[in-house]
Length: 138
Figure 1 (cartoon, rainbow, N blue to C red):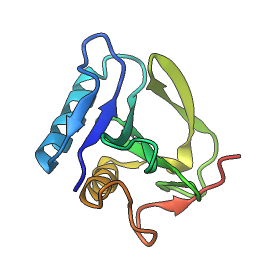
Figure 2 (cartoon, one colour):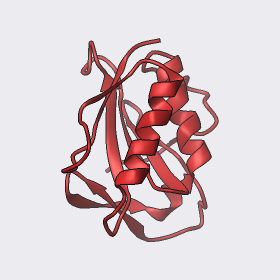
Figure 3 (cartoon, rainbow, N blue to C red):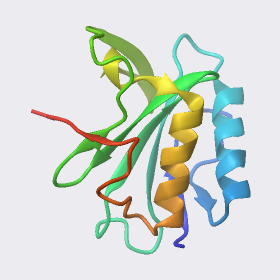
Figure 4 (cartoon, rainbow, N blue to C red):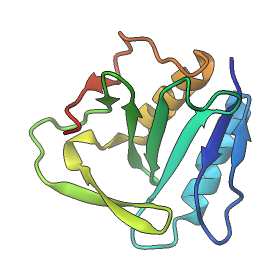
């Protein structure tokens, strides 16, 4: 397991937040949900603390009941909820709203599972991990 660094930019949030255990990961999710006082849920950027450029970064939208995860690597992967859904929904990243495809939004339990896999596998989620799917980022 590697130590992760989570970055989220809010006036009242501690950033960066280091994650070495499942308890730390749970604490991050609780903190981000508690910060959700604005009109849209927040996005957290996660990377390996000791070598942030040698591993995929994750972007995780964390709302009270749902969110998404995007992994930027080659190839890019993301969570997929309702694949027939169209349009976008808004999340907040560093006080800037980001449009996220609605089809990538999933229940919070799936977001937790993907983030746990990232932590448990030292920043490399297995290629056959069922909750991440190849996506076109162009």
